[in-house]
Amino acid sequence: MRKEIFFTLAILSIVFIIGFVSLGGDKIVLVNRFEYQPEDITIKKGSSVHWFNVDLEGHNITTDRGRNKDNNLGLDIELSKDLDTLRLISYEFNEEGEFQYYCSLHPYMTGRIIIK
Image (cartoon, rainbow, N blue to C red):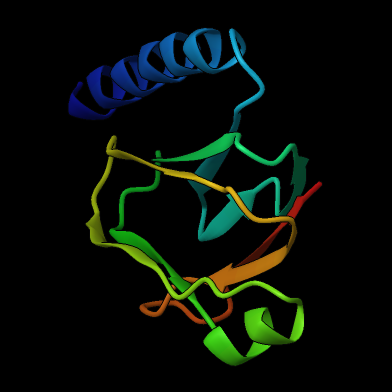
């Protein structure tokens, strides 16, 4: 019973967030099954990315400063140490380039954002 309620709330939350995000040029990345979905996205400069965790485990979004510096981005952000289940975090990208990130708790989880 608890699982059904949890997943119903998760689905309703996702539908609400996707509807909200689709109003602008923003993109949503689901954190699900120990993956960022989609792993790679392209956005316009000035747009935001919203990460929504539907996994039962906590995650975060951490940068590799060296890798991003090589791609001409001076970004060194740690968006959240505790992106818990059904939590949303956002970041607005105001520089063009390629932004690579990972979950420091689960380093095999990686993602990439191309900002044009």
